[in-house]
Amino acid sequence: MNTKNTTHRPFFDGKFKGLWDSIKNSPYPLHYTLRWPWYFKNPSVRNHSGMQPNNDKYNISISDCTDKGHENSLKLLFAGDIMVLNGDKAPVLCTELCDLISSSNLFIANLEAPLGDHKPVLDKKYAFRFHMPREFLLDIQQQIGLPFEQWVLTNANNHSGDMGIDGFNTSINLLESLGVNHVGHRDFTSPFRIIENNGFRISVAGWTHWLNRDLNTGIQPVITPSDIHNVDVNRFKQQNNLDFVIGLPHWEFEFQHFPRKGTRTLGKNFSEIGFDLLVGSHPHVLQPYERFSDTFCFYSLGNFCGLGVAKPVKIIPILELNLVKSENEEASVKNFSIHYFYQLHQGDSISIVPLEEVPCDVKSLAESRISKVMKRNQTSIGDTRAC
Image (spheres, rainbow, N blue to C red):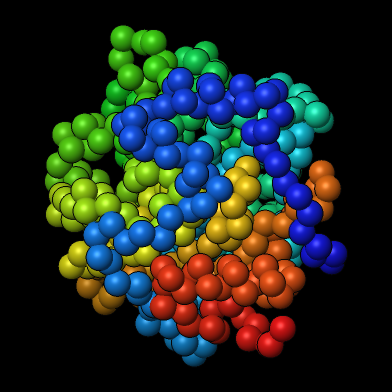
């Protein structure tokens, strides 16, 4: 595979109309909105709350890996933001990434654009308003080979309102027709979706702390933090005989490698009300994780595929996490590992490849940035050869 990385300049057509649109509709405080263009090109490694990097592997060894087919195990794969790319062309996914995801019981990610039934536009240039053709998502799914019934996508993010209420409702209907387990949409029953797989009953909820555009409806159709705080998660878990409850918060500021103190407090609060696992999104770059009692909180997994120009945004972390049940039927995290891939650009084509296959200068910069956030376990990369 040709891994030469060529220039990639989204957002820069239209004489910065997209940038003005972003500023005009920014949900952030003014001080961050004004600094956003700088962080967009230079993601920050400022450690806002003094977090210490953690290992990117937990209780894992070759002999200790849980087999997907075991009746008391569940293999979950988590990714960050699935964003629509310029030209409406899906990225080309490497075999290693497809094999990793297709080996899972469930693949869980953030759908960072309303889904539409329109045809792809080959010369489409995205700025800050996203609209994903159905074929774009289908292309990714067909490459991976995992049925949509084993996908969990959250709709709750800052781009939920990019196409208005009609576009948001269309997206929900299309996900339903594809068989995707989707969360983040208010259906007036519960913010949680219950999923049964391989002998486990788990529940997933997604919510957003940011929304760029008001959907102009009397009742907000996107799940927000207040919806979650109003639920007694522990009671819900008991009433529905659930083994594990997962939260997918869309939080934090973009292009920041470390969470703020307020976000860490939220993580602790969500763990205390009953969540067993939290996997966040929105920063577009990798952030560390921490453990609150038995709850792991991964603040950000960056992008699965994205439009960012900064090299740290092109690092693609994939979280593999195994659940097991004890003899008394209690579910817990047995082990996890973060696998690193990278988004390469070759003209109009975008591919996602293992980190070890990128040019040495790019790989070195990526590994340096990862090491600022995670204590590296080199075997998680899979290739420690010298460049």
